[in-house]
Image (cartoon, rainbow, N blue to C red; front, side, top):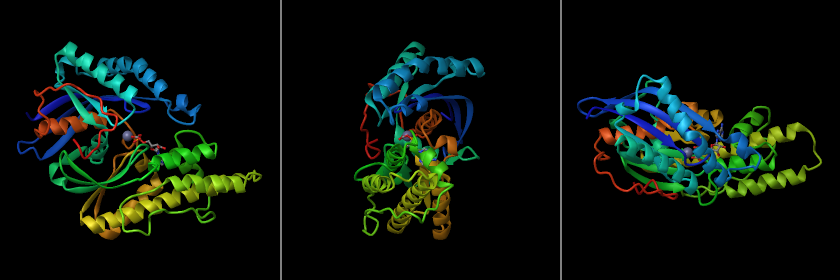
Length: 355
Ligand code: KG4
Ligand code: ZN
């Protein structure tokens, strides 16, 4: 098989993502390129913003409300029809149990009706392979092995990606994920959810040297992270300044937080490259959308002579395209046997090292 047409479905958290892709590979199965026939994303940000974070029950209900219409919309506007599909790929974990169940039930129902296989995809593998969705829309299997810095709302991991489907976690957060550090401090500063884009906006107007924040585990020879102390330090700064109505205080705090987080990521990525000697690094997940973080990591990669790959900004956060893309590569490489249909199980805590 040298070509697949896959519908990808993502519902692990607060974005409903659906995408329809054709992926082609060469005879040697080395290079993969895709054609996008349609993509839809329904964000629940405004809904969850009222609560300061994702409310799981509401997330499930929203996925249920919009999955069918997003899918119908893609097919009605594309030249492809459902009978062109080779399979339906869906995020089976990690993520919110109810939200995952909605996506996988929808995918199973549609697949049964069309007599198609369902391909369960690990959300984190979707993020990893999205790292290669750059402007050329091309991925070479020879990119393996590489290092991954996975920075999202649910995960902060340094991964050694040896080959397709073989990932080893070599460092991770012992408490909050880095995206959570953005989200929780944004909430403390009354800037809303999700915190990352808001903090990035405020940080542009602030002085990142004004407020000193801690960098836990940074002077230790470990690839693990700790972010929960940042939240407490931010809370203490807010308490100290509770009568300070000057907006500059919020700008400076946002700038300091962003700069502290990027310093932590730089220190750990530098150490990981030194320890592993990898010549390529993929930086992916929602936090990779942050321009300051991306620029600093690009500078680090240039300094160390390492190639850096990041998804285009809209594909850093959750989307259906990365799920269809990951499934296509796995099928075309023979990494996932399309006819070996097993029962589709939702795994809210599915580890990337156990694919
Ligand atoms: O990958 P993602 O969409 O969902 C998970 O798999 O968790 O990541 C969402 C996270 C949120 O914590 C959000 O605040 C963060 O990514 N994020 C950002 C930016 N855009 C999104 N963090 C920093 N700067 C941004 N521009
Ligand atoms: Zn994600």
